[in-house]
Length: 603
Ligand code: SF4
View 1 (cartoon, protein in one colour):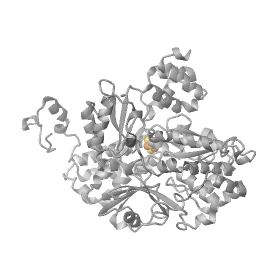
View 2 (view 1 turned 90 degrees about the vertical axis):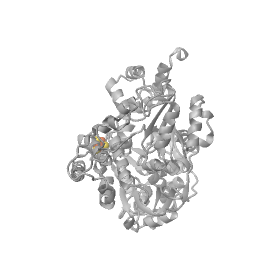
View 3 (view 1 turned 180 degrees about the vertical axis):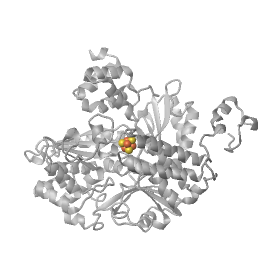
View 4 (view 1 turned 45 degrees about the vertical axis):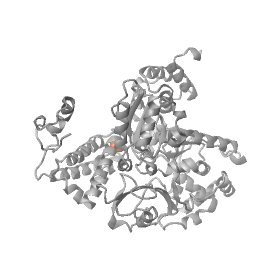
């Protein structure tokens, strides 16, 4: 019967059956249908609606929310250039424009023969090996003009991705400094056996005594979180690993999942032991789709070793298993309540808090959400005890932190240090010279000037989820801030007006300054927008959207002063600039074709 079905019907039927018609898996179903059919056609939505008996608007609402779900046909080869500031510094846009020209396709569009589409995506998590891109979900690193030529040729000749040179897809770990976590050589089951010998209560006690704090940036006490979940009322408890590593400049979770996946899954299982949870979910960012088969393989092996499933390590009643769900290109899903919404198959809109996930999380049940690194670190605590772990780092920040170092340095990659390490020590280790600024913890974090390099990476001084982007004196810090502002405007989920409109206005103001129409009036407007976003936004994205601008205005003032060319207010609209396309179409660029020379631009 299925052999006679058309491909769309077959794909929908297969995915609906695999997820047992459970509407909580709509996002996964849409993603898999797209993988099978290249895009989500109206016909696929019809079939899904019929099979799941859901309103069409609900399915379309989910499909429309995620950047990596496409409701229009795309090219057979889908090229997405990573567009973090570090990729820009390495020339990603020049390479993108070059490939567009070679393949006769406009950026953001599909070629007329349906062969290829080329666009940008937010940071894809390989900033240490950029410029990077994704082709049909597979990461390609270290792009050069020569490699772009080779890729264009492969695409023109319609060579299947499986036959492309393997070295294109090499994503290296680039671990530059190991400490207790990356240097540990735990065997699968070591930490679990130690925890079982102690007992669940004692494990919880050790995690509390360790002062292990969440590595996603917020730094909430891990032991307290696990205890609150254990004590919460509910029928089922869940453990969720937040592997939606979307903060531009962060890539440590990519390496942990590639080379330390057993530790991550073992940490989740420890959490299940401490909280009596029975189900775990790892939410993997869509950009890391290429890690899925490897992670599934590790899970299978753990089931074989009795480290997952029923009666783990022969302990009756200790039942726990883990499934992987994939995100689809929405930065906001890194916020834990938005992530839970996404796991439930909805748009990733942050929830009102309280209640918090520890009492009302996945399906309204008690849920622990921790970062990949937090779970991995909990294995060390289970094995060597809380007091040992608390002795590493500083009094308020126990343990080590893995930093994702990228930008202007000789040795980008991962550096694990005990908390308390100074910024200058990291800069020295990574071979950074002539450093003007370091952006710690991504666009929502802090921009440090050279005067602050004696400060320390620690929750009590500079808290971070891990990103450490280095900028030397050749970089224009206004451009860095403008890139981050564009990122926030692109990633605002649109749920609340202050953020949806505010981030867009902020982007326009920064573009206005960039286009030579800036006046002191615009800085006052930025200040007003900041106050609005701080006080009226629903979640942290809106609260922190102005951070990169505010930091750089104070610390790199000349970069802004240069752009304040007018004393009085200037409108942003520039008629001469707006006529650029018409000039291109008519092939004219003489003085007579310009309305004015105010923008000073000739193509
Ligand atoms: Fe969405 Fe922005 Fe509102 Fe957060 S602040 S809910 S990202 S629109």
